[in-house]
Length: 525
Image 1 (cartoon, rainbow, N blue to C red):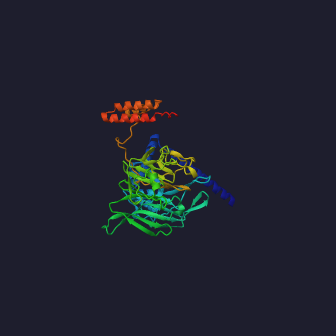
Image 2: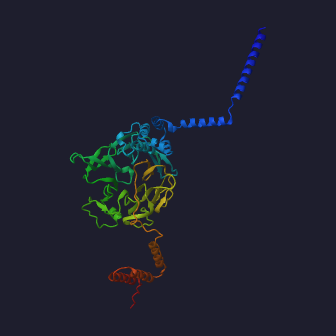
Image 3: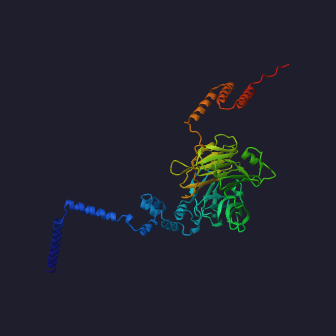
């Protein structure tokens, strides 16, 4: 009896459930909206979606959300519309981003119109890369650097140390950061310790030797306040020991002398010093007659009794950056033009020949470099390429893999087979490796001017350039020297010159013709 009652109860429950479902479906069918009612409901949902847009959030909440985005995503979000650009450019957002990236960053290192955004991007893009020359494997590897640095501005390696100058003017010394694992292979490791060598530095250089194993001192160009000068800031050169970081020498300049860059090269007895002022003037100090001859092509102005007298290098425009090699120098002026001077035995000047230059000579086809480097007998230049990123060009001697892809070298600047990372700003080279420094400064970098029309070279389509090409082709078409001299004489006659000057030029041409005539051998008696 109990089983029958249980079965009846289950049947009743199933019947009640089915009746309830049928009643619900009939009610839903009776309340089904028409087509117009469905469209009105869709529009209502659209309005509800617009009201929930990210742009309708409160500014404080939106700033807080954007501050958790990566730097790349925050910059991309700011490029979508004007409102989000204002949000992503606010200093409050970038202050929180910078604190998240570098919790222990010094606040006095943040300068500029947008200090926190500049600091965040500098520390996000900073990196040190190297590519070995020797061996079969050539790879690009990123290194480890101090967390307290405010971006990277300059980098120089030695045998046991690595020196890094950040954009805040702090010079770091990393000990045992490079390890030689095999011949021709160098590996990075986390430095066992790093110390702050000095603050307020403008530029620095290591001991002027081509071999990193014998570099002992560090020369720092800094700005210091002098108490005797009424608290004015004066530039000075401080010398530190690499091993201990102790300052052993200091030389202070006059307050009116402001410098931007310092370069040293050569051995102690054949030292060369280069100083670049804030006004764009370049001064040389050469201690050896051989190096002076290589740089200037003559010993006319060399005084062995006064070796410490700096010599000014004449250039028609302001110099923004320079690089000094053992026997040649590279200069970049305010218009982005590259000038080279010195020995050209291996084609390290990039002029297309191997003729020495005693004066600054412009390198054609290379403009607006990001950085230049002059080595022992080769030169490197960092340029912006058409593709995203940069490219490294080189010229000179290619022995030892110094010019990857060009083992025999080149007398002109050619593109090297180097994978250049994004945001690379400077480079340097040693016998073993090529080092690339990455750090993007939104408010710094070299800013070049447009070349005035008076200084610009004539375009190939101008009438003057076409007349010169036609005249040169006529001279090359003359098979004899007498025919060429006759053409030159006709051109001189057409010039608007006084008669006395024309007569002088004609006499000079006649002397050239007579000296070029072959002389008959004397008759035998």
